[in-house]
Amino acid sequence: MSRHNPEISGGQAGEQAASIARIEISRKLKSIAVPALALAGLFSTIAWVQPKLLSLRALAALATDATPLLMLVMGSAVVILLGGIDLSVATMASFAAVTFVILNPALGDLAFVAVVVVAGTIGALQGYVHHRAQIPSFVVSFGSLGMLYGVTHFISNATAAPLSQPSAIISFFGGRTAGLPNGMIVVLVSAAILGALFRFTRLGREIFAVGASERAALLSGVKTVRVKVSAFAISAICASVAGLLLLGQTGYSSPAMANNYLLPAVVGVVVGGTAISGGIGGIGCALIGGLIAGLVRIGTVIVGLNPAYQNIVFGVVIVIAVAITIDREKIGIVK
Image (cartoon, rainbow, N blue to C red; front, side):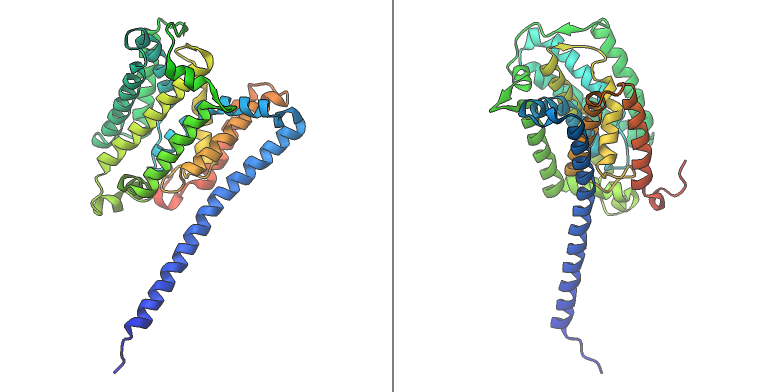
């Protein structure tokens, strides 16, 4: 009769768990290392063409320009980690800036709270409709894009408007602290909050679980409606902050001021290594991808290319990135 040694069994289980942990850490490092190397290569190439990019003034200007896009990328990444997509983020940013300019004379800086709450509510409603009505997130968010576009043009009379009353929050967003753009501070704080959400909270773990396999997550007791509502609300809140960062930079709002950010935002998510099919990626990947997308926007101007080439580059990059990151086994037949 064979005897079972619990100490040996426990030791083997511990070694197996340690091995799995090492593999997981290695996989995460690789997922960040590849986009990071691409970012370094792109930056080096642009700096070689235009050495003035290495000056502190140019780097600060580059960081300032990138902050709204980075906020959009981080918010979009939360929904894409679910395996969905939010096409309304850029229009939401324009809506937030216009709404703040309209509400600021009456509410002062409380308009910031009002804008964020309204944006979060709209995002949550998108997630709820997407789940309850079983409508693809692409369709729901595309419908929201159209409605927000129409509402924004209606309430602004389809014209640009300056910030008529001083705002401490908007002034902070457009200012600098010790030479560092305050917009970048906002981005870093937001990244830390979202990173902690994914690392230490149940909601963060459930977002990854739903993205990896929604059916398995549902069978495990995950309330997928709560997860989707929360993810779309976070995406909309990040988009609203992006719009206010743009307002801080320009001092005026426009119903279409952020509309050109949609394609770069999606590119930033997927080129950073977040799988379009969900379950793989994170905020660190999104930040690196956002910086790559931001460098492409600036780089085409620095090297003297026609700005019209930006969308061509973004279109090619997004097709390649999705082809590399999509999980075809999970999706089955790609339609």
